Length: 312
Ligand code: AGV
Ligand code: CA
Image 1: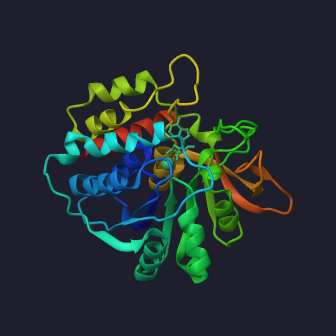
Image 2: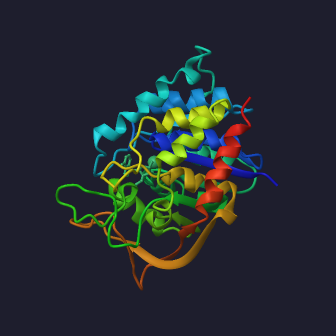
Image 3: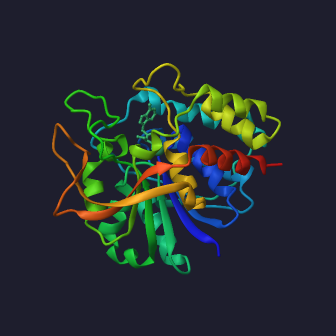
């Protein structure tokens, strides 16, 4: 049976690669896409999404823009990557942009799409949870239309990936951008799969991975992966603040091929106050989430490369 998936992303390199891969999954039907301007910019993020759909999807998918704003903005150096992906020649060859653009903002588009879709939908979120929190505030009854939420975000380790003034470094960025949104979603009855840093740190972008994609660039989809990931720094000698992991792509792969990952239940809550804003913690009075803490890394890379080879 095909899984219906609604995808909300925040226009980073791995968000956009995730959209590409999602369109290649045989047993997944993408019912809608929305773009939140967190770790990327809205205009090129929306355009790149529409162009990826045009170029790679076998069916049309509607795209919506978010008007959500976070508490803690992403560094603009990272956000600039959206422009690079949007400008790639493979996405601009046709000179057209045909995937439909919704005139609803993302949170309303999410509500509408859930209501118009038969049965239950899996939510895939690879950025902050703001649009979902707003949708739940506005139409709490959509919970019944949601199979579960699969979210890239959070960590229960001591070190997160936020290195900012007035923060203690314990949070993951998607949670830090809007901690209150995490709190709102945690307060819902939704089943939540959390692809945390515990697992994403097992899939860094390395020179080895890049070289494999380069050697297979005769496949247009694999070339697209290589071109996208040429814009961001790999893990070479030691991790830096900018080192890139396949965070969102792992989260997306977990939807398409759940046997790649292992999870365990953690009862948790989120801290919304400085200096630990966005830190997810084990808390007795919290709520259960399925934390993905392990991944078959080799099989994961094979899976995404094989999906990319399908493109003619
Ligand atoms: O925290 C990981 C999230 C993912 O959704 N993003 C990037 C992925 O899209 C934020 C982020 C953390 N470190 C980064 C990030 C970095 N070095 N460059 C760009 N984005
Ligand atoms: Ca992201």
